[in-house]
Image (cartoon, rainbow, N blue to C red; front, side, top):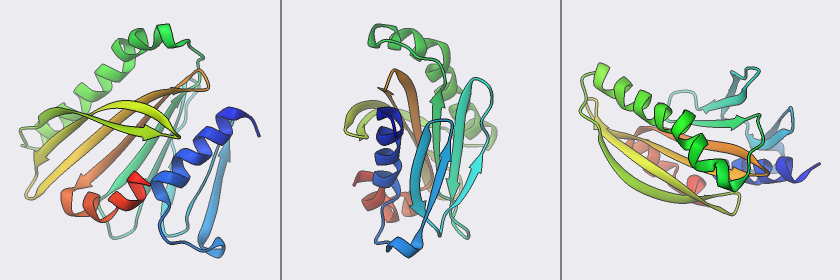
Length: 166
């Protein structure tokens, strides 16, 4: 297993580690991205030639976690260019999705760690009948841009915060 796989494994183990036993865990492994996740979550792999995109969701919950890993390799000096090229447009598109649903999203800066690396981020807070948010974080891991997003109602985000912040 290479460093990239290990980093991304740690990423989702951190994100999704709720009190699980070994028998409650499944493994996702594709194109150098590998992670274990609780079997109570469903994985949707929407990868394409440019990026791996994996969405994790829980039945009967609205919360989702999305992992986007760009397949291109970049140096830290090029991260600002990547942010302009596809991170900023992604953030804008999520804001527009909220607006199209009748919400008025409020953007604020946020940070977290992704696989032990400091990650910049934003929180797009909106009310769609109940308060909710999209928390979007990005970091460079193994020379690949990783974008981690958690979407959902605030009450479900709060419920899964221990898994998110582990």
